[in-house]
Every structure is written in C-alpha cells, then in structure tokens.
Length: 241
Ligand SMILES: *Cc1c(COP(=O)(O)O)cnc(C)c1O
Image (tube, rainbow, N blue to C red; front, top):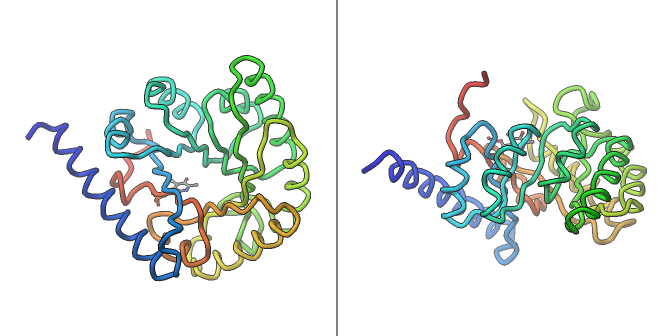
C-alpha cells in the first residue's frame, strides 16, 4: 500500500464511522430522514486531504483562518466545494472571505455584517456569485464572549435584523460552540431556544450549526442542521507552528 492509499483508507474509515454516529443519533432523535449537513473541518490539514475527502463524497468543508482557507480554496477550485468559514473573523478579511466562502458561521457583531455586505456586493459585481449564507455565532458562556466567541443571546435580534436587511447576505440561522467544561446538552438546549426566538421573527433562518467531534450526538438531539467535525475524521491536528 502506498502512503496515499493508506491515508485514503484511513479517511474513508473515519468518515464512515462519523456518518454511522450521525445516522444513529438522528434515528434516536426521531429524525432519521432529516440528517444534518456534515461540514468537515479541515484546518491545519493539507489540501491533499481535502481532495481525498472530496473523492469520498464530502462537499462541505470548514476552515477557521482566512489565509489558510483562501490558499486551499484557490488550489482546490476545480472541486466545486462549499467552503464554510467557522473562525473569528476580522472585518478587514471580509473581502478575501467573499471570494471563496459559501457560508460564514461566526458573525458576532454589526461591523462585520457591514464589512461582509460591502465585500459580497463587490464580488457579486465581479463574478455574479450567490448570496453568502450567514450564521450568527451565539456565546453560550455565562461570561459572554469571554471564552469561545460569539454574541450574547440578547444581541441576536438586532444582529439578525441587520443581516436580514443586508444585500447579498442570507440569514441562515445560529451557530455555537459548547462551552468547555459544561454539559453540551445544556448548551445546545439553550441554543435551540435562541433559534426558536429567531425563527419566530425570521421564519427562514432555521439553521442550527452545532456539534463537533465530542458532542455531535447532543447537538443532533437538540436540532442541529449543520455539524462541524474535524478531528474524528482527520485525526489530531498537526501542532501549530
Ligand atoms: C476546529 C473547529 C471545529 C471542529 O472541532 P473538532 O473537535 O476537531 O471536531 C468545529 N467548529 C469550530 C468553530 C472549530 O474551530
């Protein structure tokens, strides 16, 4: 076996195991015909792995740093993947993200909405690209925003109205990362409540981006429509240089 076929076999096995977990969690939650979208978070792993995953049927990939994402997206443009930006985003990077991103999951402040609206408008003039799918990242820490980013739940309505009114941006729904050291069930239950309040005002904004390698079952139980899975598919991330 060459190194490449060994890696393909490893990825295929890990991907199949995650898909089985998703299917059984969905069946248990009574949503067997309503599987969430699997976004494979490929940060720190090489573009070659993304090409292997695409050959295994993966269409949605996630990245959390613009420089890495834009390089990989350019190199893999022939694959027609959907690129999901899931990391903290500086407004000055909006222009770059608008070139490749299908979705941004980490919208947490009005200034970023303004930056993305301008950037998408320019990109639509240039290339005719479609709308950017936008998720409001909600902080589920008591200590709002201190740990894993996001807007406080009380800030969501205003951000949602701003997003819904913005040209070229489509309000998809909410996103969260479960707080460290707390029960993911409690966190995702809280997120489901934030989502329900949002949907009451913006009926089409029903997406819930939640669930990582450690807690995808809990996320599915509480209505996740998009899962962001990294290490259980790709293995542990190479050390950051
Ligand atoms: C890295 C990352 C993930 C994937 O996490 P794993 O634990 O590797 O599955 C999901 N969401 C965000 C925002 C991330 O940064």
